Length: 149
Image (cartoon, rainbow, N blue to C red; front, side, top):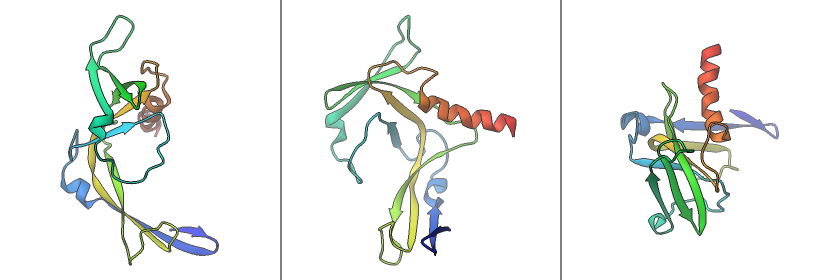
């Protein structure tokens, strides 16, 4: 529950579908890509294979193994897979209609798990993925936080 303008708003997250499909890498066949851009679209992406193809290449002398390369609308991207910390799962959520409303500005918002995914692939514009990338540090923080608790 959260307060907004003196009113309490309810939030729900239903993870039944994700946990029923199992945990672990590619549990629901969903691939998650963390792109270095803003996309003004909220919905399904059709025909993404036409515009976004990634390939894995072997490590060079200055690179870590299993870097990925892709081009998205002519922009060169370099990426890597981020494994999830032990004991954690990534869940993709979708808005769930409750009481005829899907708009988050209404009094009740609900989310349902569309599925679970394995590692997250993150992308940089033209630099090779590295240990100092904020995406990698964000997931490293989870492991660090667990060690001090």
